[in-house]
Length: 231
Image 1: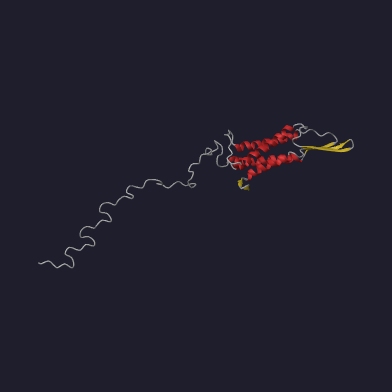
Image 2 (image 1 turned 180 degrees about the vertical axis):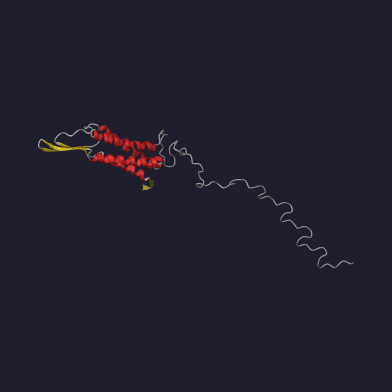
């Protein structure tokens, strides 16, 4: 776990968010570069993933959008209170890991789709593409780890709430046993009426009654201090 903004964030979730941020930042840097001599003068140029002048640009920006969406959803589930999602036919961790894996494939296609370099020039895929590819692979790996272990916010949504069908109580309803100590049941008889006889008057002749004649503290019949009877 890592402490971010006063919240405990799973290490794999930190990796997912960081990988998406890195891929987005480097998408604005050089993904394709070319340099050489042109009519006796040196020439160099570069293009980011968002450049539409090169063939296959669609594959590049779609990959970045997927990585950014996975990172953004992970961050939202982590830091936005009471965030709810609709019921999904496929577990959310599987969808997120699959989206990151698809981004890896799209970046590879973007690499292959770059045009060939004319004679007298050199260049091709640049450092931006390589770092973006590494970030996509890293995000996929962290997503698979979350999927295998069932950890992270995608596998364990924040409380309270969650989304329907994911093993969470309905939104706005307290969980079973709410208000009781965790893992404990109230003691037997808690809140029950006391047993019969509790607080009742003692039976006749019970404690507090005068002892019977001749009992304790009564002078004995013909006892001491009395003149003996005539015989």
